[in-house]
Every structure is written in C-alpha cells, then in structure tokens.
Image 1 (cartoon, rainbow, N blue to C red):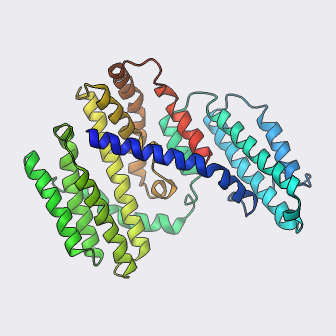
Image 2 (image 1 turned 60 degrees about the horizontal axis):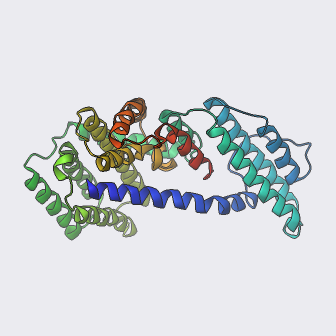
Image 3 (image 1 turned 60 degrees about the vertical axis):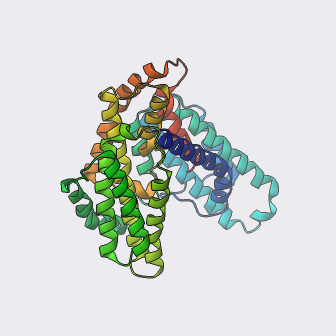
Length: 353
C-alpha cells in the first residue's frame, strides 16, 4: 500500500503543479487565438477587448453563492466573452502594437478566472458536480465521431465483467502478473488481436490484485508498475508501425484507464466499508485513490464513458462523503478540509479552461 500511496501522491502533486503553472500561459494563448466557445458575441456594443472584459468582470463581482447550474452558466458565458474578445483582436490589425491594452486584457482575464474560482468555492459542491462540469466543458463533448467509435468498442469492455478473474495465491498472482507483462514486452503488440488480448488478460490479473489489495501492504511492486507502462508503450509503438491506428490505440487505452480507475475506487470504497483501513497512512492512501476519477480523468477519457459508467461513477460519488467521514476518524485531524475537496477540484479545473 505504501507504494500505491506514494505513486498517487506523486501523480497528484505533479498534476496540480502542472495545472497551476500552465494557467497563465493558457490565458495568454486564449487572448491571442480563437476562443473555444460558441454562440453570439457577448456584447456587440462594446468596441474594445478590454471593455468587454471589464463589463463581464463587473457582473461577476455582483454574484455570490451560485448554484451549480448558475456556475456552469457563467462559465459558458465566459467562453462567449472570450470569443468576442478574440473576434475583436482578429479584426484589430494593430493589436500587437497596443502593449498597454494587451496587458490590461491579460490582467482582466486573470481577474475573471479568480472571480469564477471564488464562485466555485462560494457554496458546498459534490463529486457528481465535479464530473458533470468537467464533462460539460470537455473539448470532446460534441465530438460525435469519437462517441460513435467509443460505442463500437464499449461491448468489448463490458464483456470483461463476465470473464473470470485470475485465481491463485498471493505469490502465484504476482508471479503470473510479472510473467504476463514480461511476455507482452517480449512479443510486442502487432495488431488488433494482440491489443484486445493484452487488455483482457491484464484486466483479469488487475481485478484479482484489487480483490486482495491489503495482502500487498508494504510490498515493493514498482517493477509491475514500470512493466505495465512499458506494455502500454508497446500499444503506441504498434500504432507507429501502422499495425493499429493511433485512434484505436488512444481510445482503447483511455477506456482501459476509465475501467481501471473505477475498479480501483470500488475496491477502496468496499475496503473502507469492511473496516480494512486502520492506520493514518492507509487512510491517506485510500483518500487519494478514491479521488482519482474526479481529479485525474481528463476530457478525452470522460467523453468515452458509457451511460452505465457515468451512473456507476455518480453512485460512487454519493458514497464518498460517508467513506471520507470514516477515514477522517482514522486520521484524527480537525483540519483535513475533506468537505471542501469537490469545490477545490472544480476551482482547479476552471484554471485549465
């Protein structure tokens, strides 16, 4: 468990750092390129980019304690505002020489983002709302071709539930897992059949591993983590060799990620319910693992979720407050701020928009 805890903590810290570091460059890019939203310009009466931003910022500052629907509506309006600003910039051939105006727009953009973050934290949020917001503003939300491709592949992933997980002792499972990963690297991935066999066999081993999660507490499993990454790299090497398409590789690997993350959360929630978490270190590890769908799944992964998977994630989201209440008692901390995490995750996502 220590390994899994360290891996998840490292991942989350890197992800959050990257988001915050990239927030300002993203703002600069938005102001110098076409906006990502749709709809009519926000206010045609305003004749300068800074004027449009000032007007919208002024309106935001009058808002307080927005409902989730109100918050998503405001974020949608922000996309329209950025479209209007971008349209003005494209029409202004002297834009690049207007240094003061450009600086003002950058500052206003950052102020708007700060106000939206304030509104995200203005009232309690839920994990279901975190997923809904990320899905709503995914750049792939209306990629119907991607959705059709996912629908064609979903029956394969759904069929994995009916396949038997690996059976054997703890030692036999680890040996089988390592042998499977080693053989996959040696043979490589050379077509669609190899890709689906890899996903199917790995899934059977991974489900068996999750069923005995506590058996591996304090064991060094870094080689399995490393070799799994190498096997996933083999999938993309197959795409480079044109033995499968890049689209196929991307969708299968993203849907595999969705499934594994959800399996992991389910195993952790069940472990909490069964009283298997007894130490603060375990409690921290379970908190970060349970958070993964809401913290790490990106817009591409979310766009590939089936209706059933969305329902499963929503059901698990309703279980999280109870699980965290149990884990809080083990942590014996009065300042863990667990109830604020959904709002903080929404705030972090807003910084990426």
